[in-house]
Image 1 (spheres, rainbow, N blue to C red):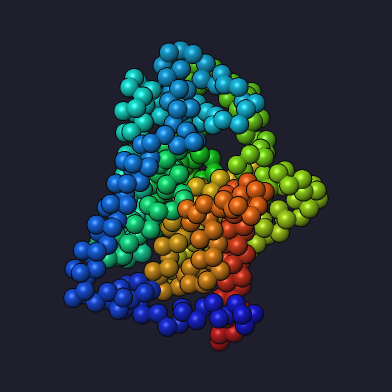
Image 2: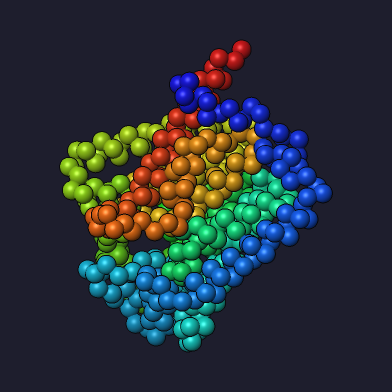
Amino acid sequence: MDFYRNWQASSTTIDTRHGNSLGEESLFPHRQHRVVNSILWPLAIITILYTVFIHSLNRAVTDDFTTVYSALRRMWQGVPVYNENYEHVNPHYLYNPGATLLLSPLGVLTHFDITRAGFILLNAVAIILALILIARMVRLSLRSPLIPLLLFAAFITESVINTLGFSNINGVLLLLMAVFLHALLANHQLRAGLALGLAILIKPLFAPLLFLSFARGHWLTLISALATPVLCNLIAWPLVPGASDYLHIVTPYLAETRDYANASLPGFAVYFGMPGWMEKAWFLVFAALIAWSVIILLRWRNIAPTMWAFSTSGILLTGVFLLSSLGQMYYSMLLFPMIATVFLPRSLMHTWPMWLGTCLVLAPWSWESDLSATFTRWAPVFVATVGWSVIICSTAATLSVWWREEKKQP
């Protein structure tokens, strides 16, 4: 345990005079702000422009947008939406009828390239807005040099590069998550519920975040977050052609564990032929670590609500990425709020193992190696499995140290 206690050394020496754990003034004295900003803002802007207009507008190997756009066009043409061949490994249209109706305005536009470019730009703007909102919640000034540094760092991650390159909707989902967390902490229950409900409607992986509202006793948030996807689907069911196919075709497909580009524990187990008992054992171990972490974090829901909400959302979503039937590395963008707690007086991100796991799931490295074709084949996918596992184990260990230290106090 002494080894783990050393992880927390930085927490006791951090300057909190200026509203964040790093002591923004000590990092960048006021007289140096202008100089540092003049360096970092051009770097951030050029990186964003390159990622959006050069890398993303070029067609990537994986194209999520065409699948979505084609399905939405079928909806407007009166053709059954879920009429794909779900036997192959290409991206499939998996959104429920309610999400289909919500996204349906995209299908009205007939110029594919312009629509795709606009969708990429929308997600890029959503990511920027989400990062700024998250930064404000951890008390960073908009004039701080840390803002362009955060934007630069985000837009060189694998998550942002592939989200925009694959032209999927995760940027908008990150913004909805940020709005939910902001409204949750500000006690705006209806706004929090609508934001979370829309996120769940599009991707049910956000459902575990309902726990945060439950823990704060925000019943209106819980009701509205659950009612939003239900009502949207009830409205959409008679309007979306072939809506019942979602239950008969898509839902069974979603329950399957695929062995292609799947970094979750079940995907890892299928790919490497892990015995069923071993997979279940590892599942229970990680589930127990996640549950332990969530329970211990409750101690800080009133003392340090931002740290609690950001960290709890991070560990819950990491658990979803690792333990669900499908986990892909670019989902890790949703961990940005937890990573941002590094600027708070107390944070799980004040430990090196957390940064090890974070680097593994966010770094845009190529893992191709002339030394091993096998390593080249599986490393780009399963490095995320390792990274998520490290984050979960580090979180549980760090919180155990915090809990032990608190018990020693009179």
